[in-house]
Length: 257
Image 1 (cartoon, rainbow, N blue to C red):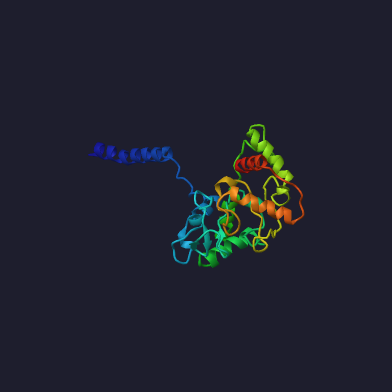
Image 2: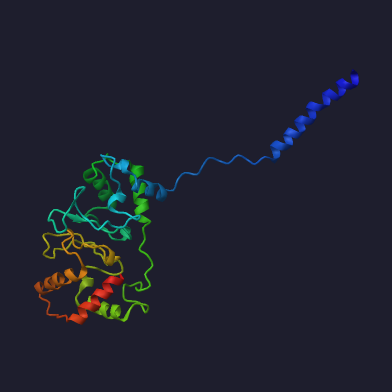
């Protein structure tokens, strides 16, 4: 009995020792998950229909594919015919941090514009400071893509088609760069070019994919827009003339932006 009792007393000690070894060898419990980055949180909010009053609309509704344009013209949340005077076309958001001020009316910070769209157009509640900061962080992350056709100063690069290189010279000849200032091809001040008022000057980057053009989407193509621009130059007293070949070269250059 004594021997049995002695051996019985040893077992718990062995078990405890083995347990201690197992605990020591077990992987350490990971710390709590790291907080989500503002950019990722902003992306989720950008796609969140809960920001709208009806729960049906998100920023991505009009700016699909992460921040592009749906190529439509709106009054509020209603799609209207392109060219409707009260309508506003949807701009591209890539490079938006470098193209202040914001809204077609101009004069707004990015924060003011985003907040206004959520509350006035989407009929949502006022976003919290954190929500707004995260949305801005996401928008600031939308850089212009690397374009092999452009030099850093906006001129046509060696890799650009020959017509685009000639078109860049036409761009300068027509003084397009006075309002669409390279390398962002935007301008901080509004301009009144006889289109119905003074409006923010949009960037020309990605121009080939952002039709319809002008604030109200009145021009379905760049080819339809160019004559109006040249007529505006004539109204300013410009004596420059442009032949058909120059217009074609200009279109090639604009389509490479």
